[in-house]
Length: 401
Image (cartoon, rainbow, N blue to C red; front, side, top):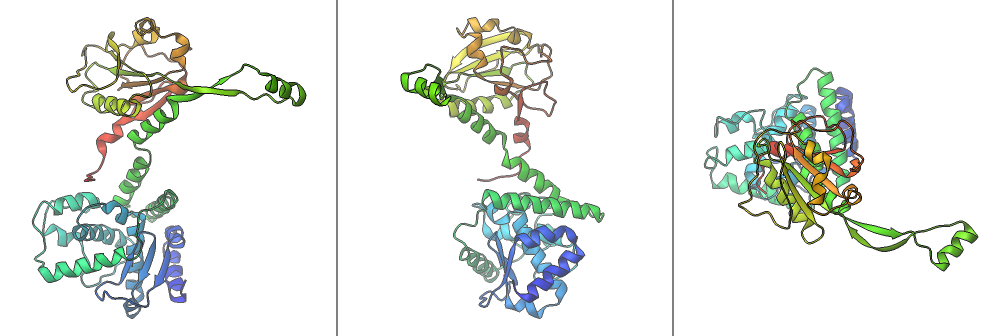
């Protein structure tokens, strides 16, 4: 790292200790050749490249520009752009980042995008909005701030230069984790200084949630659990010899065994319209790989059947009170010709808001609680087993994948 950059980094960490981790995490370089005179810095999502022109500016501006690029990286603005219009995305992300940087340093450079500029296009844009929401609001109206062809071409030239830096700007899982830790440090430091982290805290929550999206979690559980290796305890001569001679006993794999998947839907009406997307997800992942049973229950079991698809006309039966007692009595096993031993080996997903009678306080012996998942549409405490927070899908941000 260049001596001048080291001094800038040192000054920033002395003034704002919460920035120590991100400043050490991210590489910063001066560029010798710079073909975009109107831009003082750029990032590829992992490193920061500074223009030689930046040396002519005062220290406060240099620090502000470095912070600006650091927050672009911490907030993953390059990967989050996806297929959106890069010009509008760049303006939206700049406004968000400049608002955050203003909490640390007051600096201004000619042409710097602020929320006030964007509010001239759409007055509904708020400083509390995330980049996706700002972008969405900007695209509601024709482009843009009185810009002509010259300004648009200049922005295109700037953004085209970003593509030359790295062919794939998307972050690895390790990069994402480090950025998340850095973001935590920044938020904690801002709170300690009495500053409001605002959108930063919301972004951190979104990052954590997207790392364990309910759909992704469901897929991993099913793929990992619905087919398992069965091992025989039967001894052959060679294995008997090893056991007698060396005291080593090893099982012999025979075949892959399918675990049944049982989906229980609370049909009292409180789960609508969430249940269908969940059921479609399960059927899509398990199709032709294992048996899937659908049980509908409100105050009693309304329907129980084996399914291979989810028909469009499929509707919940019931709508009355909610009592799960009949399910946990397990008399329904006779209808699908399943033994209690097979039930204990099954993956069970119970889709509900858990506002119901008849839920045992302790896991019944017929069920393996490690294979029992409460799929929740509200944030509630589960009595036992594991949970999949399906309600989180209802609060996803604007996305146009």
